[in-house]
Each structure stands twice: as C-alpha cells, then as structure tokens.
Image: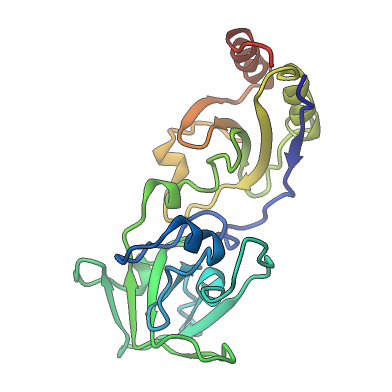
Length: 249
C-alpha cells in the first residue's frame, strides 16, 4: 500500500513568485530529450530575455521582471539551485510596448504574471537598465493556470482567499490532513496551496472561474479543473467518490 504524502505550501501573500507557474517557450531547433534534461532552460536565447512581469510602478517608472529561468539557461541539470533572479527595468515614453503580434500596447496592459520579452537583456551583473522594448508574449493555458495545476501526478487542492479575509481554520492544515487520509490506499498524491486573489493578475480568476464567494477551494490535476466549493465537506465528498472509483494500489 502506497504511503500517502501531502505538501502544505506556505501562505502566498502576492502573485510575484510566478516563475514556477509557467514554462518558457521552446526554440524552433531540434532538441533531444537528453539535452532538455541536461539543460532544463537551454531553450532560452542569450539575446531574448524572457520572464514574468510584476505590475508596473508608474510613479517611479519601473517594472520588475522575474528572469530566473532565463538566467539559468546555461546551467546543467537536473539538480539546479532554485534561487530567483529579479530584474528591474525602467521605462519611459521612448519605450516601445507591443503585443507579440505587433499590436500597440501600454504599460497598463502589463499585469502580474504576464510573460514578456525585454530588450536589451540584462547585463552579467543584472544591474538595472532602461527598457527600449517590452513585448507582451502569448501565454499557454499551462502558463496562465500554472499556480492552480498540480505539479505532481495527483491533485492540487488550492484555497483562494481575498486580502483581509484569510481562510478559516477548517480550510487550513486540517483540510489537507483529511484529504490525505481519505485518499490513503489509492495512487493519488496531494499537494496544496493558499493563494491570495489578485485582481491585477494576468488571468482574473474571479471572472474566469466564476467565483461568487471567498474563500473558495479548488481541486486540479496536472491538466484541468476538477472541482470547486466553498464547503470543506463537499470537497471531502468529492474525494470519497474518487476513492470509490479508484482501485486500491
């Protein structure tokens, strides 16, 4: 019988740490599976600095970009350290801002979590510089919803809440403990997260997921949405059904 485990991810205060949410674009050249494993971020190009943006500070005319994966493009895997790299780019009226298709955009169109290409790329010392060009890149479903999708072959139980209204005790650690207990004896593992709703995120989850009340609980697998409720008992009932339908391992 497989030992069950679950991961309780620390409370996420903002949406800045988005580097784990998405995957960088793959270059058009042929890349063997061995090369991908040896250089996990080798698809990034030196002269195309790509990262995920935070909401721009229009008062001080700068925007912060998480370029962690781009900075690690020459590092061999599979064991790569997980430190992050933030790059602060200043902007002005001379900065050209467009969508990937060439359509004009403005600094107001850049939301938290938006994948962007910034020119010129960061220097070796990662010092701040003026952005001559910012391109808002198209994003895949996995990149947009990466915070909700499970990163294991199992379920991600996400509690989403609003600022100033934290999850009640029954939606905290007991939720994950009970979920793990219910699925004990199956081949389903569980991870979990607390996410503060961010109206300035690249996807408005409140609108897209038709959230009527916070806090709300979501269950996702690696590919898609499975269940939503504001009631922990309903979540347990959903997991019980999954267990009934799953042969014991």
